[in-house]
Length: 446
Image (cartoon, rainbow, N blue to C red; front, side, top):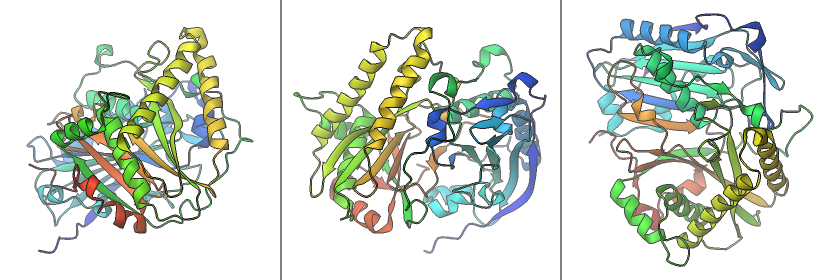
C-alpha cells in the first residue's frame, strides 16, 4: 500500500512579542566563544499530541500564543536578533505559525514517520535559507499543526547560537508550565543566560577553519530505535571486566554507532575518522551552572580516532568514552569548583576544545558527532492537555555525519536520528550488528 503524501496548509503567521518590555539594562546579550564558533543553524524539537478533547484549533492557538508571550519575558533574548557577537534584546519577537493537515490523521503519520514529511511541521519556510540563515534571522520559530483526528504537533526552532539541547528543554518546560497556569516562582527556576559568564566572550576576529563541503553534501536522515530490552543486551555486550563493567545506555549506543559509522564510511581521502562527543556541563558543575542556565554550556571533545582501514571494537570504544569523561571530571576538579572559578574553568575548557579542533583538518580527518538528549524531561511537556506521545530532537540536515540520541517515551529505550551521506547510509542501515539491536523507523504507537 502506497503511503499518503501529507499536505500541510498554513493558516496564519504572526509575530509574538514579550508580554512586557525587556528592561534597558538587559537589551544586549554577549555571545560566548562557543556560541560564536557554532554554525548558524536552528536546533529543533517536535512534540506530538494525539486526540484530546482539550485540543481545538482556536482555543489551543490562543493559549499557546498568550503563554508564549508571557514566557518570552523570562527568555527575552529569544525575541531579539543577533548582531555580530551580541544579541539585541529589543523585543522584535518570535514567529508563530498555525497550520493544518487535511488529508492524514496523526495516527497514520505515526505508524511510519517520514523524515521529509516531518520537516513540513517546522516553520522554516519563513526564512530564506532555513539551514544556513543570515545573522538577522528570528531566533525562535514555532509552528502548531492540527490534524483532522484531533491531534497536533508543535515544531520549535531555536537558534543554536544561544541554545543547546538542555536550553531548549528548559524553555519548553517553562512555556508548558505557563500554559498550564503555573506561574508561581516554585514552578521552576528563572532562566539565566550564562554562556558568556562561563566561556570567554566571543571575538568577531576569531574563526575556526571552515568545512568547505558543509551544505553541499547530499545527506539523508533516518531513525533507528533501540528498545529497552535491546539496550540492556547491548550494555551487556559492551561491558568488560577489565575496562567498564557497567556501561551506560548512551555509552553503549554511542560505541555501536561509532563502529557502524566507521564500517559504512566510503571516504577514501581522509586518513583518520574521529568521533566527537558533546557533554552537558550543567550536571558536571552544579555548583557553578544551575540546571536552568541557558546557553551553549557543553564541552565538545574528540574522544576517538581511527586510521584508514581500522575497525572498532565496542568494548574498547566504551572504555575510551569513559576515559574521556573521567578526564573532563579531573580538569573540572583541578580548578576547584567555587563560584570564583567559573570563568577560570570556562577558559580552560575553551582552550582545550580550541586546541583539539585546531589539530583537525577536514582534508585528513572525517568527523562524526554524537549528541545525546537523553534524560531531558521533554516527555513531561504538557500544555494543559496530555503529555506528548512522541518527541523528536534534531538539527539541520546540513550538518552531516551526526547522530542525535533521545529517550523513547518509556525512558529506557533510545531513538537515534542519524544523518549521513546517501552512499554511507545505504551501507550503515544494512549493518547486521546495528540491526541486531535497533529497528528502523518502527511505529510510534504501540
